[in-house]
Length: 247
Image 1: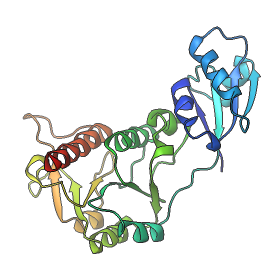
Image 2: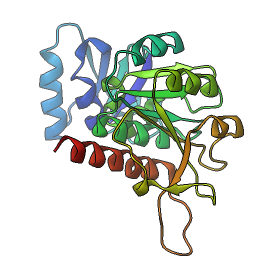
Image 3: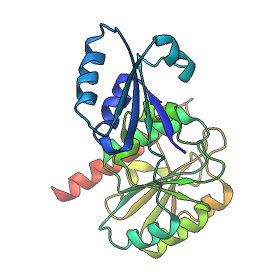
Image 4: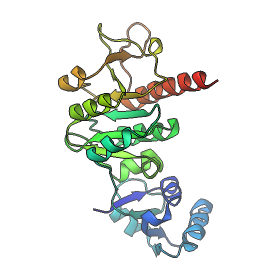
């Protein structure tokens, strides 16, 4: 199924892979300079259909603030669990993000944006009990979806066994007496970092598959962050450690 995305920045990012953009609907008679610049870029892409329409038509296509532009992308091409098993053996010291049951499309998009910025080798999401990648996800991700290797699997716990068999250390995030500070762990090698559901955290079976449980130290009285914020903190601590090792 094709996906609609909206917003100037989201579509600017999507155009970095123009073959994935099928058609763009743009507000006609707009004086917005960014929108006019975007129109010129689209007009230079022979494979993209551009339709200038009334703002009211865009309103019917998108219930959120579209900034005068909506686009249709080709259906997302997720990789499979079988492909993950084949690919992980070819990576050297991979950094992998596993999202276990996120429900909010905005949180999913923000996590994907952080993953792309951190340069992860792969993102693993669940086919079931997980937010779909919607137009809102694309907008929040700011184009990251097109730049990531995303693997959609039917069983996260089984996927973790595949990663561990390939020599990847699995770290689950949880604030508990059993977890240790993220800053006390060595994240410079082959690592998978797991972020759990916004409300309930990691599922029990997923937690059992983890080699270590880790948390972000916080001031007294605070024991949690929004999952997308926590994802950014954890990923960039891993990036910091990896840079330090190379230096």
